[in-house]
Image (cartoon, rainbow, N blue to C red; front, side, top):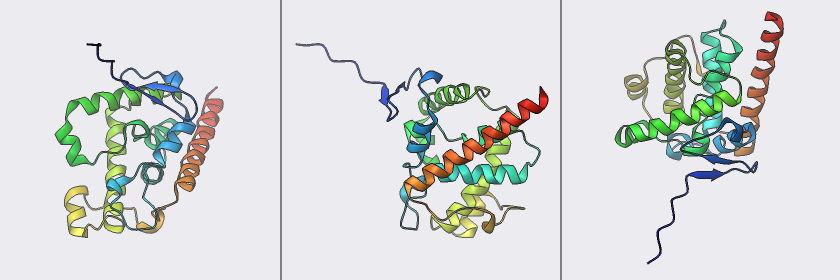
Length: 207
């Protein structure tokens, strides 16, 4: 009887990179793969109104927009970590919070390893500080409130219960109309490039 073949723990990317999910290397992380993947992962398990899924790529842009409006003095590096806050999902997909709670720690371990590899690839700290993480979570909750009520069929009362009542942010500030995947991909990549330019300008100014 032949021995069983070991399970495959890597993902082939369209860039040609082969990313090991259990031991991801920053050298195998490419922005083009992140943007492509996130633009094709649906938020809310796809249970949203519109002709297109509301993608994680578009969600990340919305969260960064909220974060920047709420924290106008934040550094470009902090904005970049906010934009990338769900970047591991380009490999592992978007799992709704109730199911994450069921899966437990294994998912979080893989997610943190991927986060570190992604951040290090772009010259960022492996993980956000506790303070920054809390600010990102606040922006994420505001985005979730609007996504829930506008796209996912939640009542305002339900959304307030789960995500809180947004303050200082209004719907007209946010690009919530679901975009085709190619447009969401470009939106994410363009926002990344804009923030990277700001990071370079900050470094030049500090030099």
